Image 1 (cartoon, rainbow, N blue to C red):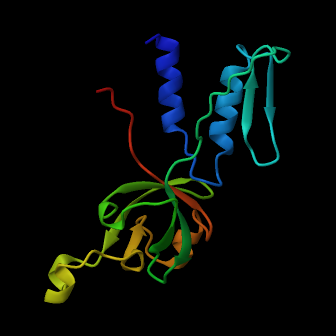
Image 2 (image 1 turned 90 degrees about the horizontal axis):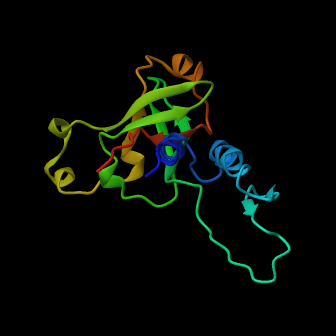
Length: 165
């Protein structure tokens, strides 16, 4: 892979783009394809089209998604923990312990947590947790402290790094 293509792939993967919040990755794509395309457009829904030879009689469309699975903050409790809903489908059991980025007034690191296993009743220990049992800890000590950097409606993405396999 060319070094320029590799750098672009890394940038695409590093750019947050949960469904409904794809503006940054759309801009990255538009900026990258301008040098190759005859025409670049964005419609009212945010879909980006890069067109080569727009007057050609034969047309081929190559389509892809800009969005990624994410979450959205829907409540901040008195201890500064963020409660969230999914954006897209995810297996809740795989999210426990995941590092995340919350995209609020600034990008804030967090980790998805749940009640400590030592506090489970026997009946809880074999249950797959539900989303309401999980929260995001950003290290805030209060709702007021959390609200300085995060608000209700802030999108959340997994803090996953690019790795070449």
